[in-house]
Length: 372
Image 1 (tube, rainbow, N blue to C red):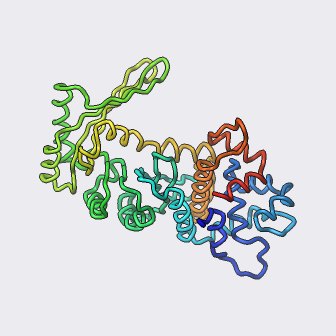
Image 2: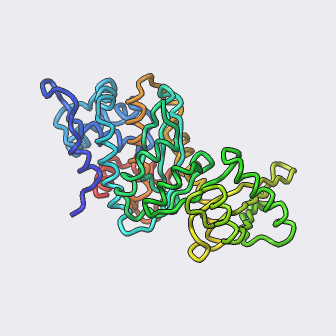
Image 3: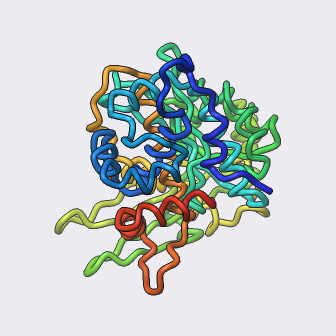
């Protein structure tokens, strides 16, 4: 039988000396994950919330002490935990959740602004809105280099991950070549960092847009005004020729996406260019447009949620390891919230509503989450 997240956390090695340990590392981790799932923002909030409930919640978390661990103890444990081991446990658990799924994932970097400005790379399955991975970005590396280093492990952990989408930071030839060599596909934005290709396709589409209608259109109502996205795709032959001229690996399609929206009373249009290794017989214009649009779910459904739900950018610490571990635990809580079904008739199933239900019933919350 597949292990739950809490069972995986019980296998994390305690970094402390055994002598004098009052609360196990698994108790601390499960307490923090549960607290984050209840939308408690900081460690102090979690401790204060569970203290009067500890006689009931503590045994469920594996503790036989009368009081919960204090905030100082929790921070020390989190700071000393092996981040790679925690990430491995998270991926093993998440891979079970997405087993059998054909995944498209967005990759994007984020700076943990109040955690010594540590940068991390997130991988987010935007179709099902689950976090797949988080990697720390070393000072000497950029986002693209970090992804290339961990690419083989990522595909090994998630065999169903077939497409990676990224902004212009991920349009490097070496990275795209590595993705193709792994038997997967890319969809990347191209800007001035690929100057030759960018200038050429700009000229193509300036003429193309005037000559013919878009290959696909999506519209989104924003009362009383409408937002639309249109996509134009050049022929496969032209895209392959472009790939040969500029030595761009596996290039099959080139697209221009125009977004039109209202900024107050002003109608605004902006355009972006995209490259993909997926041939047109496997990726239609409509699906191409949907993949491009869905990429930004990593901002809307991950980064923004963590900042608004848990004030991640306002959690100050000078200790890099502590900030990175807390960010990973928020990823765990977010995936739990997305997967849990509140067994209450008429219960709302949005993230905020779920958190309120869990906060109101912490013992039941623990039992519901421990099954996932």
